[in-house]
Length: 444
Image 1 (tube, rainbow, N blue to C red):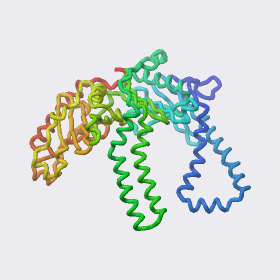
Image 2 (image 1 turned 90 degrees about the vertical axis):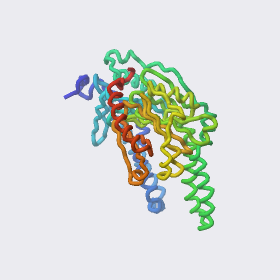
Image 3 (image 1 turned 120 degrees about the vertical axis):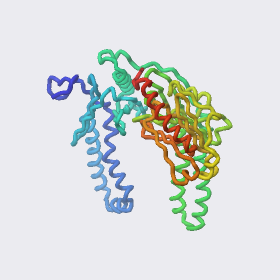
Image 4 (image 1 turned 180 degrees about the horizontal axis):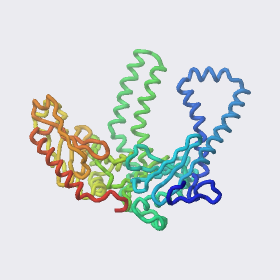
């Protein structure tokens, strides 16, 4: 029995509308058996070394003669038994060599489709499609497709998700895009140098490694501690530079498009209607330059970064495109907790602030690394007032607003009476905001 919109091939083999992935895909999947052996060796290196020393050259050659063809056959078979098809109402992906799995992805549930090209994929001219679907935590993907085919399929799926008829979706094509911002590599490099995380790991390494050498006089112990410390410093600087290189933000009818990456190139889309929270982050060493970082919470999506670094004025204009009708409250509009809150959180209470406008709930926290979270009233799912025993003694309370991204934004240490009024008022604002909100649809 076939699903609607899919017709059986006259030879009875497979539905005529189904397609296979790019022929280069078996090369990628053939690494799975090899990766299992490598993982076993890394898990128990001593046992692996003992087993290798027992192997003669002839035995090793025979093993390679068996392993490599087996890996190639595995890659070919997994590619051969993987098909996908676009019907009138869904994207269907059939996979599995021994255990069959069929994913039925409703087109109206698709909220974002990312096109990524790892370095070797760029050389081979192929790309990977990653689909963000409402109600799922894990992204389904199609890897790999030809680069042109991937872009055409992405455009077709977005057109279908926007409500275009199947017979016209091919004609819609990819929505035009207008570039809004491009982060120069030099600015990104300076911003990462001025990031506290990089210097923090280097300071820890500079202090801990000499002490470890003094205590143990073991070079291997020092190296074992140095590798993760220097690796963490590299990940927060070099790793981020490679990932966020040539960060470009463009505006299109289907959302904000983000392109980035030095080695692995990624093309992501942020549908504004699904954005639950926007955070404007201001590290200490960026303030003299007026730079900020903009992060996101998107319902059902792993996309979490909008801008790695940008001048505050430009960042606020981009935020206004993500959250229509919302403006970032100025610093002077953020009201600090009452002075008696200092007994609950000494010194750090000065970093908290709150502003509530007709469109947004805005809460700030942090002294060295300020973070201002913006939640449109229409995105608030629930409101909670939390007050511990020490807070009750000081007459303060926390107000939490929960969003559709399973995240919370907290207004810390507010006056207890103010918190109670805020709880009631925010519940009403949320109901009114959801009633007047625009639908979360593509190209709306």
